Length: 510
Image 1 (cartoon, helix red, strand yellow):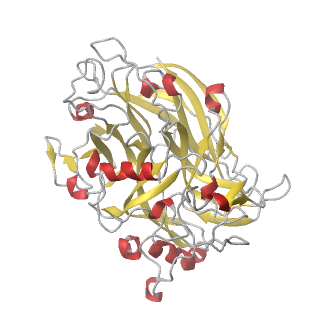
Image 2 (tube, one colour):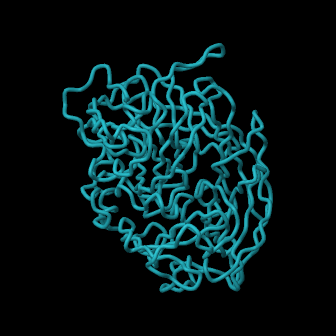
Image 3 (cartoon, helix red, strand yellow):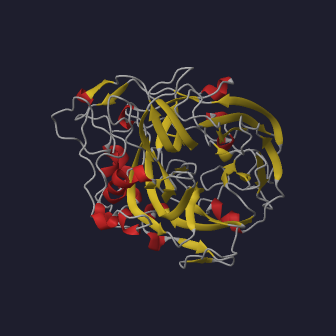
């Protein structure tokens, strides 16, 4: 359990962003308007949208690779302040639930949200409680996908450990561990040809030592279990592994897997069990940092396709980018291809509103894990599909499971230029993402060969940080992309080099 601040405030603890939803127990009560209203209620200012420009062609323009520039390893720069709040710990759970093995009930709304997890907001009740950290922590964290949201470049991580600052001769002391965290690149360093410097927000810290609350809130069942069992090698984790799926101007979605981690304390071998998927609404704030609201306890179950864990995309309606109309498309992971699901933007929390591609049409019946209704075939460990206005088609950038440290890309072979409904010359009644099931894909081509890590281990968690380069970004009509991936360093997580390194490269498509 994370420690409380040394001198806690006597004021009642405000609710974290994660507990604003009163609909956590109901899978169908949140809507487009309610998600939008949460951002407005939190006082989130809206950044000016980035304008999009389209190539002048009636045909798809085949993409190629023009140049690439490796940027190196990113560094962490935590904020020097935190919100001095002593949150009550998660309630204790029944002793007969504290056993080794998955218990899906711990991830349900019956337990509510743990008050000591999730990012705190800076608002009228917390502004006066901002004070200095005793020392900035050293962070070691895994993953690092994300995306552009409301003027900020977000990087979302999975397992994150905090330590006291190490020296060249000694490692830092362990402080705490959470299953997710978030940071922003405040300087847009990659645009200057530099490695990223990532800053964590004020609302992420649990105490003045730099222990963390975690980006994704846990249920009190998950956290209560972890409080007792994590020291023995068992825990529940919410791992936001995919890129952000834009929702509107101020919010994005992440379909994050709930994972049961069982580590053998003798051999240190870990077994990870997928137990279902939850839905996070990410909001980009200013002072407090980005936050996540867990609007559904568990949207998809452990015996179902892992929908959305590799990502998805937003298909906006005629209101254009940042609007609340249109659909959300999800990719479903199988061993030999990706399945496709979709839902109206106003119904993302209602699993009964999703429909699934069968290979012949859309059906309310969910595809099974052994379905062969792939809209793209192949073996993929991570990746992103996005629309390129400069090429007038969709591009798929991915890593395969063959440990070759190589990014590949394919593009959709449409027989004409594809335009969204809000574009000049676009059909306002159309859904551009429907083209994903109408056409085939080009053969995979090499996009970028990443340098080997210090231990020779393969890279993972690779993808495109969509929107990073603003008007020059490939998602806005430019041709630049920021590639990111994770490399194990082989170092102690408390060492200066940390256990993992987030690497990036600036690449320009032809």
